[in-house]
Length: 465
Image 1 (cartoon, rainbow, N blue to C red):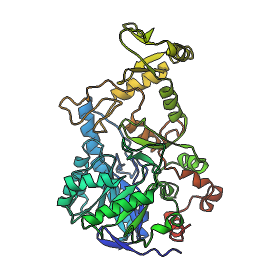
Image 2 (cartoon, rainbow, N blue to C red; image 1 turned 120 degrees about the vertical axis):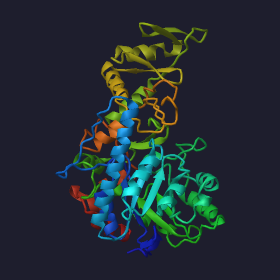
Image 3 (cartoon, rainbow, N blue to C red; image 1 turned 30 degrees about the horizontal axis):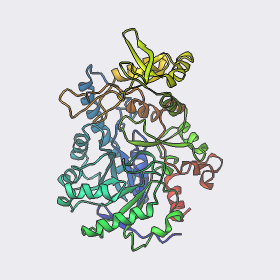
Image 4 (cartoon, rainbow, N blue to C red; image 1 turned 90 degrees about the vertical axis):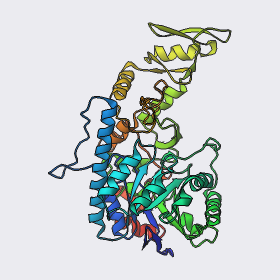
């Protein structure tokens, strides 16, 4: 048994073990409440959370309004209703133990409106807000308004420094902790900056120590760091515990809680995760947010990789280098390099007959079926992101568009995450996962397909196993 000492998180002394929030429907009120019940910190996702009908069944997502702006409002209304519902489920399951946190994707369009809507109607049920995928400058002000604690998710001391100087220095009372999420190890969206090489991971220890030194310089010695990304068991991180260079620390588990009896993901999804091998998780940049993200390599991801690898540069007018004509459609011909002619026509001859422009003066090649599906997904856009490369939606723009052409190298993130989170085919949708997911296959806790309860998992974690 490790010497795990309780620490104060969101105003209460609890075990320094945190469930990582995962949306859509990767962590909900059931998993959150189960973690809190064990005197840990549970986290439900505020990204399109489920709510229930009069019979207690999940209300299937349906958007009835005609325009994208109207569907966007509908999505926000549903998210608020779902957030309140999941907070209630977590609160009821917790038995008054632990802490309940809500996780929000800052790049979700109108994330502040969702947070305000949920917090105003779920008073006393939510103790803290974690927020990442972007720079949540207004998080401190919003949390302070409602008297709850806030936890920015960052991937470097530099990112926290920016947030502190621009905003958080004015809202210190409810800064409950800082989540350091390692950008090379975490699942889902990762906080890699343009200055960092996705192929050259840095040691998390040095980055965490740098963060602690910076926090201490601002008088935040007693504010815990919550370590996230790549956390499987605590034996791997024992040198972080009771370490004066790091100070108060808690550990956030993102991937491992997904295979528990209280986890909301489908049995098919759990089965896939139990069989993943080392190297099956790919760090890539296909997300319509523009961020790097980590996901399990399946048919969905392989198709995007193939499309990217088949990309060809073009110009609208021929020159000495771009001299080979390529007909995009009956109205437009572009010019590609002679060296790319064989690459382009091999794809067309193999059935990738739809030639589609990207915003970067390149073309990619798709099947007619995939192109028709892409057009339908764009037509059904609900404006889930503040800015979307796939649909060109922008919540900040007066005309609600980025002004760029849609990017066919990406996908509708709302559709695929919602579908796989509600029983969709695990081969044909995005499966976010951390880079330690391969350890399910060899961990004795999951031998012979065993699915533990949250209580059983936490008992193992407390032992360092």
